[in-house]
Image (cartoon, rainbow, N blue to C red; front, side):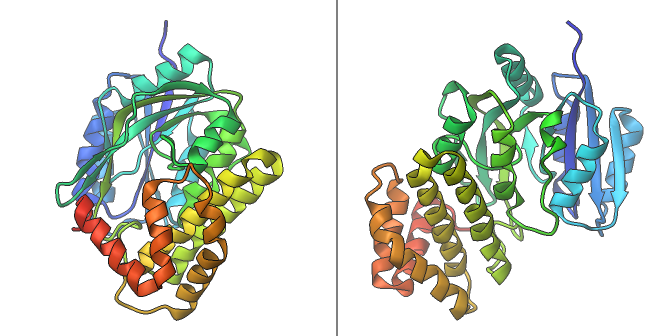
Length: 326
């Protein structure tokens, strides 16, 4: 059987330190019929030069140089020109196993699905390694997939570590100018599907590095996670009313995750702190009644009873015990 064309899209912005490792992991895939789209989003370092040099060496590579518009804009630009029947997105400071594309493609073809999902490994710059794979192989409908995401059970909202039928993007775009854009988009792509297949084997390496969106200090812009999560939860409650408890859990997680970002920060943001703590206080009792919430979240919720300073202490202790400190 002839291999179908698959488009691999890499949004690129000032990642010269990591780019070649990522590119080599894509170029050396066991699945060869690839269109590798490098979207240089106005990089100021040597990333544009690296892209052009690799394009000379490998004719499968297409390079777009554009003015800086952010991650969503770069992804949209790559998707717009993609010729492949299927699309996968890889962040250019991460890298993948050599059978990443083959694995995701086979999951789709063998199960007649519109989307496939693999697991990933989280790598911290201090050497901490967290494996996310569970070994599950599941064929799911959109509702069940969303429920697993809402409860953080083996599937997350990341754009990467997934393969999509290209037509899923006909009605869904990444929101330009917004961070945590995956939280605003992935659930819509899932709900465009009839069938999603999960192969929970680790094929993607997600790097937690200095100055990434995840590790940068808090800013009010990080409250956008709550906005995007609220949109998703409202959508889910409207379409799948029996997932209300799961949606409430996910929204509480967004508040706790944002509070943790604030706890990392030396600067004070009293307005944002008040908003976060007030929501948690008002909804904590209901959240704790949900038996499916994770032990980590349960401990976090109990710690907020004693105020933000105590929560901050518990969060720092948790990071130290789990090796997440840099």
